[in-house]
Image (cartoon, rainbow, N blue to C red):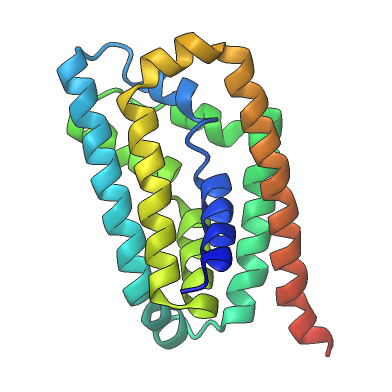
Length: 200
């Protein structure tokens, strides 16, 4: 395994998952829960996210290539556009985030699975990213990136109240915007790589 490639892939996936920027969302979604229920919601979110992304590594090629007849360059173009839209939405705190904040608060497991796991942590952008990483660099790099990113996310969720009090809303917001800017650049690069196939 190339450790430089693993680091690069992990940083890309981390920017897409963006657990730091989502801390205020996590807190708002679970603000009425007792500590034990909140812990259960976050635990469910991490395991569900891991299962979703790992499943997409194994089944993504079959689903896309054989069922939908989509090639890698098609996915890169569409995924790049999607990442760009998600990044712009994060940058302006737009409709995607507000729709999540407006969702009904239900049980801890339900909140952990939807919307914390999907679409916040393991959304379409993350699914596309792990599939592209798997296609370009293999299973170990893709799986390693998932494990590292979700481990960091678990630590953030485990100490979420302390982190939010220590850094404050402003720092979390600034970090989220910086990550979103990098995400927009990644989206444009993937979009251009996908479109380049059609202009050869």
